Length: 320
Length: 276
Image (cartoon, rainbow over all chains, first blue to last red; front, top):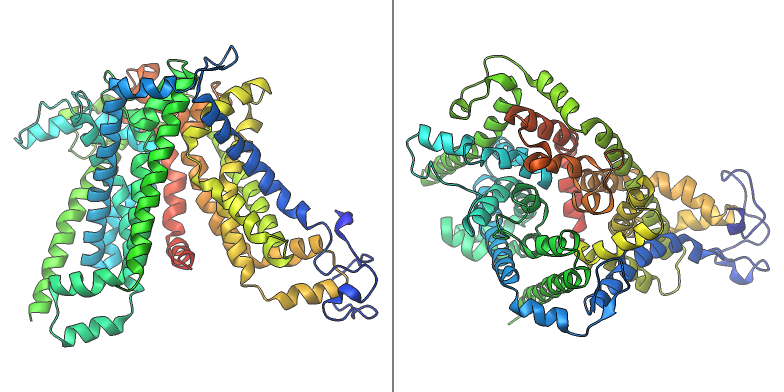
């Protein structure tokens, strides 16, 4: 790395008096001294190279492959919009889109909604962190671990059914993972069990950073309970709610791990999400071109949803 | 008076909710601890009569490839975030401290990498990796895990370096230190806390990954652990007794659970900072 040294190198940094006329911003001072060094691009190139070669290049390649017929062996054959036409007529894809929407709605309503509820109930309570602990424990488990463990709990003769019958509750003979869209809903509930914690944590951080003055002022004006929350606290939470809802939206759209582990999209493709459909089309059916089209569709939906969402959020912040 | 009443209502709601959330946690732990022979789904609620956790873990170790895959996972989740953090720090240093021309454009170029959905990467990576013998290869997985983690590292390090006084850099420079030496000896040590936070976050991400492990590897010596254990619910490990599967799931989750609980404070603080 000696090539970065613009001046004669010194073995130690410390207590060396400034050399010669090396005064401030010495570009013109000593001949050829560049304060910021000459090889600045060398520093940034690993990051740029990795991102370009491993993220952007594949991205563009997938976009191209979505217009081809490709099985991974022979070279891709350009077929124009054929894959996209096929998407429109694919029943499995329709199911997959429906399930993906269920995931998005479910993610926003359950883990985010309940996380908000728990955060609001507990953020200024004495010992609030103890009340929150039960919700945090599941969070550190991975999506795959969650799938493995709950896959066993929700088996037809598994614990869930046995416990329902033990307490004499209805649904003891429910086959949780057998039929759509029930299987998707069961998995969303499992997901909610895990994800509530992180949403709650983010909301608590947001609530604790709200300035006290407006709340006290509203209290003096007689606001309390729901009206206090609705008209004072909720608007002040905007920065954090923007982040949490945005993250939930994207996570719901891209869900793969838990579905793949618990049902692999089955039975009979009934619980596939777009991410699972893409994976199955490529690595099970060997339809690389068609799978790429599904990936592009998923990307487009994610991009559009994020764009619309952010625009609305940012737009609302401007004074009316 | 009404306030203390509402406080009690809040406590009550939280306790009921909390118990509902704890119940599955209890079920999982109780049945992972239960000796595999004692397992009966209709008695799953009863506390285990004796401790079979370690036998279950040993059994899981024999039945599945947990051992090998855990080692690989550890390799990926340490080396890749370390590389990513280093690359991110170098990039942040070039942009903020060395005032690279068009620094912000470079930053956006790197950071926009987070927007790319993983599904857009799988086909080219799979095909490309197969061509250059990186498929089912430790190096291949290290490379992709590093690349995915670079944007976040660059974001955090760029923000962090922005808060370090420029005079430090200028003084060291005029004392004759090279830009790399200043990076290595001053800026990196200064940012140890930020580096650690990013590293932990990315460690957890790599540890929990399923998608790339599933796509880019197949042999048990290369596969990360979740890609292997996800087969517990499918036919590959069919007939695995429930306590053994639960014990396996718990053991593999343990490192990230511990890491998360131990560093929870760090994260809530980091998240507050991340809102700029």
